[in-house]
Length: 253
Image 1 (tube, rainbow, N blue to C red):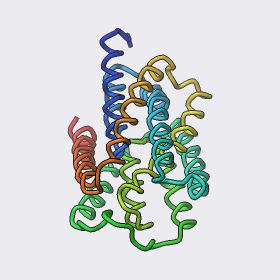
Image 2 (cartoon, rainbow, N blue to C red):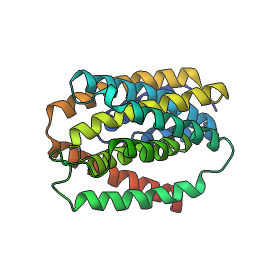
Image 3 (cartoon, rainbow, N blue to C red):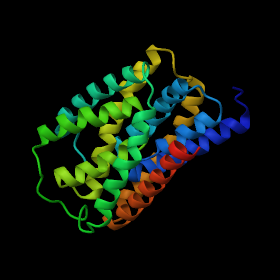
Image 4 (tube, rainbow, N blue to C red):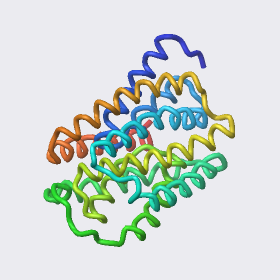
């Protein structure tokens, strides 16, 4: 693997685009992870380096949304705890087993959720009553999605947005903001494990992190100043492209 200046430029551009997309609709990992693999990174190094650069974007967006009053860290402490535990277990598991089986299931899950949101036009426009208690929600989805993010990652933000909308009744703006808190928790825990195991390339990760910072800041600014209709359209578009990319890479490449 030779990291030349053109390769560094490609990695930075991919991270910038991923940071922008991820801060609005999730799914940034579906951009950066394939690029890292295409540049010749070993799979575990690609996953670890991806966590380093993604942490910049998720933390930036989480802080920006909280500063604008769209989320509250104190109300998500239980979610952060369960997500961190799930991510820790998932990251440890990916070091030992093949993710191929799980990867094949993700497009199916995303497709079901995509069509649910597509044919429920009022979902996410306004706040609704929660379907389950917040403590139960964070225990189930914190552990589950935290594990998935640590184990593989791409599409995690999209899953979080959907479950915040469907089960906690949040509008899409609030769901986007709270998603970034959960993403930041799982990214940081997963990154710590990859660092301990020596599966992170620092320089490429930091370079991509600078792109993530700018992309996430721009994307979160767009969400704050645009309505839920724009977020819904952007989100559905990103999820559709994520599904297509995952199906192609999993079943046809």
